[in-house]
Amino acid sequence: FYDLHADGLSLDDKRNLLVPEGKLGPWAELSEDEAKFNDLPDALARWQKREGAEKDNPRTARSFVVPKEEIAATGYDLSLNRYREIEHDAVEHEPPTEILSRLREMERDIFDGLEKLETMLGDASVREAAE
Image 1 (cartoon, rainbow, N blue to C red):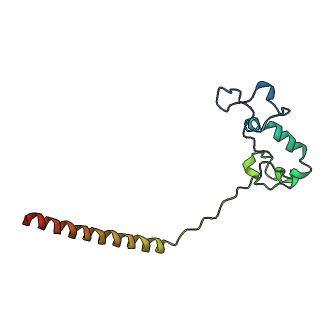
Image 2: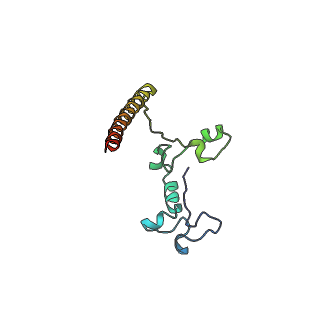
Image 3: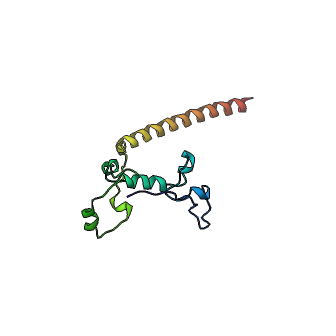
């Protein structure tokens, strides 16, 4: 399997050329920049190595090999996502009680700040009234 992203043409309904016409197809020699727009030469190169180095690629890689028996067992479903493994980064969350505790502390700080502000404003209004 190969996760093909680009074939040298835009993916919209216009299918505009993204590489020069002579560089379309799997046999084109592409620069590094052009290769971003045409995966076909890379797909062909990896296909030719499927019995060698590509055979050991993990299922999280751009290309990987699946045994025929496994494909047959899935009713010959050739969907990439049927066989591809997706790595998920483990996410650690704080316990809700710790989050609530921090929120309460913040609320206390806000409340204390408001009381100080009211005191300061109260003192200022008393001074203004006295003048």
